Image (cartoon, rainbow, N blue to C red; front, side):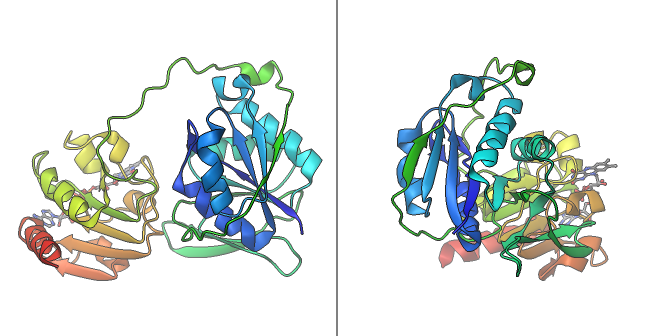
Length: 319
Ligand code: FAD
């Protein structure tokens, strides 16, 4: 069976959920080989084995993590030339997409970004599914040139464990001087909220201008907390200074793809939809029955969020 390379997304060895999703998808396409770049591998071993990595390429050279993404693209290109994988899967975050783009140029391969599903094609070439134009179209695509490079959105699949005993292989790669053009000077972790990371959360509760104030976001946070979800915000709410930009969902914010997206006091502008259109189930609370966001709602409540959300919170707490 053929290898599928999966770039491991981790923070000092703590593997992010997106990687377990990528390994689950990789198993449909071939034999997953995890590519671990950086320090902290001891922390990552059990997760990579639990989700079916048959092999782990271990790249611990400091220069791979001391600089921005260019060295990672070079490393993956050298590995791909050696391993000749059937596909390379990366997370669909800003770093994953930049590595993927640079890698595609190096390998002269086709690239698909923001896949929400990947399945094996009849000819062995993976077929991807993407949602485009703010959810207006669903596109199925297959790379026709070189090694398919695919970035996959968080929550594209439910991670399924498949215990394995991966073979570990230490790999040394050559990093060019050109790839060392920008060095990372400092990494500061974001303040911990106790909530899941927005782009990885399976439940997102987002508030918009209808929330009315920064204090009003306490209600959005409360609903997120009873559901174990993350908080998101529209640009109108962020621009008003009610919630930090790191939580903005949309074209100029984060892209989320949760199982459940609750939009409260959000009208549904195309730029907002661009960041949440692939959510599985969308629940809308809006006092205007004509608000465009209702077009994409699976469930909708026409009403004042300040009345509807406290009732929802109370009901969820009671169950
Ligand atoms: P509004 O459009 O003002 O809607 C507020 C909604 O709340 C209304 O539907 C109203 O009926 C409802 N409401 C009011 N009071 C209540 C209440 N008490 N209870 C229930 N409902 C109530 N936007 C983003 O969100 N993310 C982006 O990344 C983004 N990027 C952009 C990039 C560009 C280049 C541009 C031009 C725009 C971008 N925008 C983005 C802005 C976008 O066009 C909208 O202006 C924005 O999404 C509107 O936010 P909103 O829905 O919260 O506010």
